[in-house]
Each structure stands twice: as C-alpha cells, then as structure tokens.
Length: 234
Image (cartoon, rainbow, N blue to C red):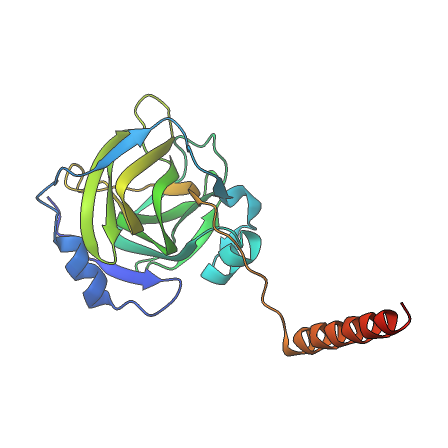
C-alpha cells in the first residue's frame, strides 16, 4: 500500500493538522459496531445542501451558510493524498465538492474536472442530530461513515455505491455533531466527490440589529401610549 501524504485543510481554519490526523488514525484498522444504521430516507424535517446550487470554483463555509442557513453544516475538512483523479464516474448527481490540491483546498467541480485524492472527509455540524445523508460521486464501491459526539466515536456503518445508488442516509440512536466519510481501510487510493449533504433542519432564529431592537421598543411604547389614551376615553 502506498504511504499516504496526509494533509488537512479546513473551511473554517480552527482545526490543526495534528488534530485531524490524530482523529483520523484512531480507527484505520478497526471498524467498531455501533448504534448507526442505514435508512431509506429522513424521517424528520431535513435540509439538503445540493452542490448544484453553488457556482463552480472555490467554496467556503460562509457560502454554505448563506445559501442554506437552516443547514447545520459549518466545517468541511478534506484529508488528501498525492494522487489526482477526474470526476468522470457516477456523475448523474451533477456538481461535486472535492479537494483540488494537496493542501485540501475545496472547490465545486463539474463532471470532467480534475481534483485531488482524499482518504476521508470530515463534516462538522453546529447542532446535534440523529440523521444524516450524503451523496457521493466518482466512486463505485463501499465507503464508511463514522459518527461522533464532540469527538467521541459513537459508531459506524458501511454503505456502497456499487449498485448506482449514490445518495445514502443514516440514523444514530445517539445524537452526533461530526461525521467522517472514508474509503479506508478498504481502498488505499481513492478519488471521490460529495454531491450533496443532508442534515436535520434546524430552527433559524433571526438576529435583530440594534437599530431594529430600538425600533421595536419604540413601537411598543407607542402602542402602550395609544392604549392608555384609549382607556381614558372609554
């Protein structure tokens, strides 16, 4: 097996190479059974980050949040290898997300575009959930999904795109906020892309600016004043 050159790049740069490499190496040779199963579809409200909605080229976490504010996806990390590939297999789901260099910088690709091999991709969520979905392109075969609760491994499940089913959904009996997708230990060399990510729909609470807060207070005061005058004349 070729010795992999592991690099980590983060859309939100608060993860270090050491952190991602240490976590990645925890289970390369062990596949723990856990409370995680594959399901046919979501059974709770969901939101799907479809990469067809993005322009081609570099992508950031802020762009995901701006296009899909009710998605809980915050960080995406690619751990890459030195090899490259072409997005030319399982292309039916359209645009894909993948690393485009050895440093793991991410971009949206069209079928036919080149990209870098990846051992694994980490997806961080800002809220805990029990269901998750992912679409995989340029890959025919099994891959593994590991779920974590604040860095603690909950369990894993293996799914496969061999039969042409490129979108998979999982459910965990324990809430999680981190997902790892990897083709290890089955395949030492791999080039694959993500075509979509589905998470449980989270409630988006609008944030009022100071000006809007003051306006709201003023409106309350006006309503109170009018009500007082009304009561005096009744």
